[in-house]
Length: 154
Length: 77
Image (tube, rainbow over all chains, first blue to last red; front, top):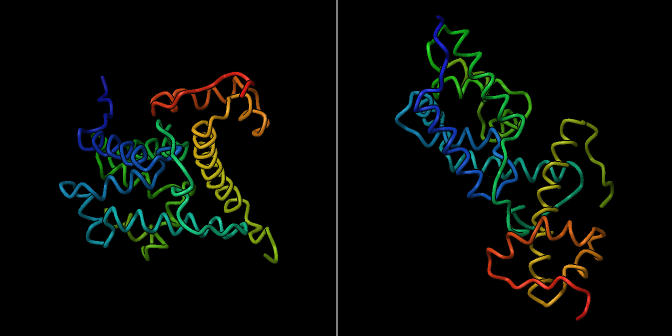
C-alpha cells in the first residue's frame, strides 16, 4: 500500500494560523498572503527561516499586501483615505479563497515531485509561490522580492 | 478624476473588484449597524438597500444580536 502524503503538524499549524490571521483581519477569505504571513511567523521551520532571511516577516508581508490593495483600487480609479478595514466591520468567518485552496493542491504536488513523504511548511510555501493568482507575485514584488528567486532557495 | 477605468488588464481589474466587494461589505455592515442603533427598522434598511427584509435579516441579524443590539422588524416608527 503506497504511503499517503499527509500534511505535517508544522503545515497544519501554518494553515490554522493563516486562518486565524484572516479572521483577525476580518477578511472575507483566507488568502495566500495570510498563509505567507503564517509561514513567515514560524521561525522554527526552514520555510519560515527562508522568508526571514529574505527580510519577509509577517508585518512586512501585511504592509506590502495593504499597499497592493491600494494599488489595485487606484488601478480602477478609486482612492481611499485609509485602509479598506477602516470602512467598517469585517467578516466573522472567512472561507478559503480558491487561490489558497490551489496553493494547498500545489503543495501536495511539490511534495510528490520532490519525492518527499509528507507535506510540510516548505511545500506549502512552494505551493503559495507557485500561484499566478492570489496577488502573491505582486505582494512579493511590492516588498522587493522576486518570487522565483525565493522558490529556488527551498 | 480624469478616467474611472485606468487599467485594461482583466487580472488586475477583477482583483480590484474583489477588493471593492470587501469595501462594500464593510460599509454595509457599518451603516446597517448605525441605522439600527438610530432606530431604523429592518424594513426601512431593506428599502434603502434595495433588498428584501429577509435578506437584511439573514445577513446581519446574527451579528447585531451578538453585539447586543435590539432589532425592530416592522415598518412602524
